[in-house]
Picture 1 (cartoon, rainbow, N blue to C red):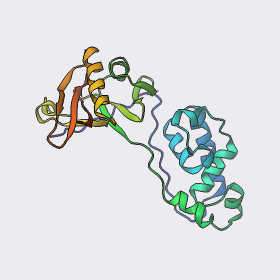
Picture 2 (cartoon, rainbow, N blue to C red):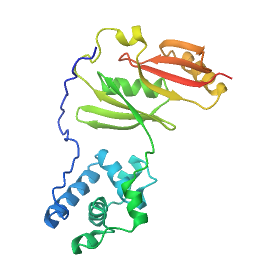
Picture 3 (cartoon, rainbow, N blue to C red):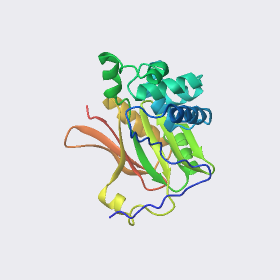
Picture 4 (cartoon, one colour):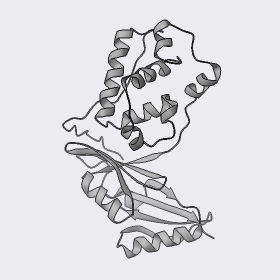
Amino acid sequence: MLRRAHRCRSKGQRPPMTCKYHAPMPNIENLKKQAKQYLRWHRERYYPVAAKIRAALPQFRHRSDAQVLDANFKLADAQELMARERGFEGWQALKSGAHAMSHEAGHAVSRPILTSTAAQLFVADIKTSCDFYTDKLGFAVDFVYGDPPFYGQVARDHARLALRLVCEPVFLGDIREREGLLSASLTVATADEIKQLFLSYQAAGVPFHQTLKKEPWGARTFVVLDPDGNCILFAGPAD
């Protein structure tokens, strides 16, 4: 049974980025202001804006969040982002009310490609969690946001885990351990890798909810228990 998680708003926290369009051709002056807002967010390294830039602008499409935020992003780029999100080739096309982009380009915008996934873990202390995942599990910190921090992300290879600060228990008692409720599932490609990973974590003194075992469905798995009671499954082929 879940309890409602109260949000801990920290200094500098921003609301989610949402845009509602009430007319086919929004006011150009309003769009200019929105473009400048995107430019400010990029300069302030506000990570959610990186995904919007990558989705809309081809030159950023194959870059990570950090690479997008490190790149040179000008007001002209922000204006092009505004135009492409509305189906136009560029800012001038939007201003002149030109026809929407070609079918090929429009198809790319209308059908986003999902490139990654990140489980969101509820934690009591961002720094403590980052230390555990980096020192014990071999992850690296992608980013930490807020002052004091209330959100962050760690990554190892293609696996990403988002860390969300909560001020009260989200789960009732020890239900996650009793029921084996997983917070994230991560996989490796070979049987040797899952064995090697388990042994390396064991040598590092990582706490386990379940040690390495062969499952009836043909996988080999183990479950790590993080400082906040999150159960993280690691899985690979049995043979």
